[in-house]
Image (cartoon, rainbow, N blue to C red):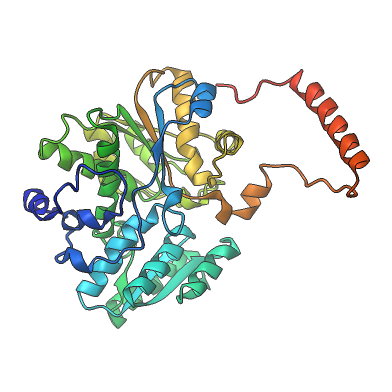
Length: 393
């Protein structure tokens, strides 16, 4: 789906491409929204882009930037897509919105449906953390737990037979929605504004359906066409080693991305084993490539993020895991300007969070007990550090 970007540029508010921060509503003409004043927003976008001095020192990349999408209203990058979907659903006269999700997308879709005054039903996969169903219900949506492999058919029934709006990726399984991914162009817009006049050398993006990678790529491409930047970054699709259809398609020089049957990975949000063909085209067109860290590498990246104050879900951490692997392999030079996308907060996956730390310590409320505890911790730390190198690169 294409937007007349020159016409869109004329319709954005003055200074829209000069100010950092602020929500994505100012870019509404670039998302195929007819009336920007009716854009449904919860303040999404304007997420932090920053260098973390301690993390960069541990990784060994002074110009590594984090784009923290966990700072969005429902703590996920999906808010950009669903702000567009809810806006279009309302603009086109829909009263109902439906989605299929492993968690983040469903919670976000329910939130934006409520913001738009729409009814929502979210088909959630069995095994998703309870917090997602609780969020959906709190937003006023209806959570339906059912056979994950058939849920897309139920969504198609609502769309084709009942006239519901699908908040969905562009993957045709069995229906598609190409509109929402336009919202991801705002990630590129914000990065370009914040780093001006520099353009990242590499963009590392966690890949499930690939909409976020393609949408961000499209944003940079449109900025180049408008003459606002002179090049597009190389895009690196980051997948789990056991759920990496994009990497396999690139390695086999395929023109289409195949499906991996029954993939198993801790990175559930990007573990469906399907990826869009347009993500494949975006990687190739940007002279990029793919990287597929193992679950062990993803777990290490989670620990590393948490150790410097960033609690990210495993699917977010695949981009940091990829940076470490690519740096070690010499595929990304250490001095490049590299952006990793952190897609969602880890707090929504309590079992993952629990695996990162130790058991809480229980003592009597007495200073003697506290002193004894501190002495014991100190001895343990000295013994441990004598045989360990933290966060090897």
